[in-house]
Amino acid sequence: MNLYKDAANLLKEAKNILVFTGAGISAESGIPTFRGKDGLWNKYNPQELATLEAFLKNPKLVWEWYDFRRKLIKEAKPNLAHLTLAKWEKILPITIITQNVDELHQRAGSKNVIELHGNIWTLKCLSCSYQEKNYEVPLKKIPPICPKCHDLLRPGVVWFGEALPEDALKKAFALAQNADVCLVIGTSGVVFPAAQIPYIVKETGGKVIEINLEPTPISEIADISFFEKASEALRKIDKYL
Ligand code: OAD
Figure: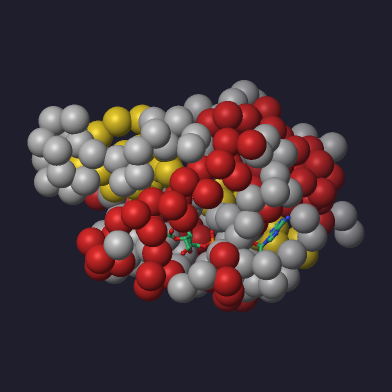
């Protein structure tokens, strides 16, 4: 029995493949995850940094934290897991649905990427429709100000208690209903509605392959699980493609 070969065969036979990624895929690039041993939410309180209320109370503090994360992300490079997925996109019908805001999939060369939780390089106005992509690290002015209406600019990410971008979520759910395979990589699978995606694939007859360092709630519905680093598992599956 060779599960890597089985996973490769499922991918080769599929007409639609969804790759659902979380912070774990960027861990090997040196970007901290949210949960687990060195997770950000062990050190920082999300209620003080990742909610609209927190931002309105102390925009400087929240922006300093995002500025620190933008620096980490800018210095990071896509790892073998990101690069393997970008390579697969050329030979397989893949769409990546990511919860990550780091843009590392795109930097690795993936084109079909849906960002469910926004993008840390997007700045958007609290009041008007202004938004921009801004890769400055550190930001020149904290908090940044809207050039159009002079209200505060906020990070273009989804905070706790906020709705996901409607378009991205709709697309993601529609793709999930049609996917033959969902490859879940590096997510704890506890943040909804994003975490619904593998369940939708399973309920509509698709297969679920999971790659994570440890079991998650998604492991219960997974047809194949690999409990190891994302780069390792993808490298081994890649050999059979
Ligand atoms: P988490 O930090 O909750 O989970 C990361 C998962 O990756 C864990 O299950 C780890 O075991 C696993 N992992 C770590 N290193 C890995 C590696 N090298 N290879 C494979 N797996 C590895 O991150 P997410 O599930 O992405 O939301 O978190 C979901 C959301 O919660 C985030 O998008 C963020 C956060 O609050 C928002 O910002 C809205």
